[in-house]
Image (cartoon, rainbow, N blue to C red):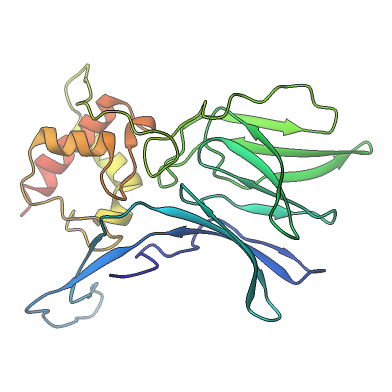
Length: 277
């Protein structure tokens, strides 16, 4: 077992820092990977990836960690465990407010001192970016993009939400913007996506490079980000169903890509990656 997993605990989501309290606020993913060593690991060579084995995914759900760290002592001030991965940047204000998004669509304001939730607002898509705060004509505003994200498993959207103390827009109902797996919303029953046109492997190659390479590798052999090999001759329906509904730590891409787009990726995997071996 390998923990944190191959993509790291705290990787892309930017952390925030309070210089008066000397506290760093970190958003992290609690994920477990596996590693299998090859009986014959071969020899490392120049300009080649060498691991001597392959990474995989543990049979466990991902969780999220949001924590405050005192950088003068390297000790935790407080720590939260989330049911979904923490995949959002945070900002902290001089007034002691800490803003951080959630993959289920919430923007939350916490106390920077103890992590207590002071306010939350449900948007229409995953809040997987960093909020911004600014002052205009004497009023303080907070603005955030609710767009979701492939690896955060947040519902895709394209909304800009701006807040102030005299705002009037009501929050959406909690759970109105669910993701598909890993606790960010109830997983729907697995069903094979219904496609409406012939597959386009060239378009599938573009999607594969954007969403699949970090975990499955450019050639589909797996091992780079914990994803299994895709070149073992899986059937069309098996690949399409997994891409749609997710499996283990793999997110459900049906909320990110259409059935036709997922079918394009499936066609690319079968016609190009599997045939190359």
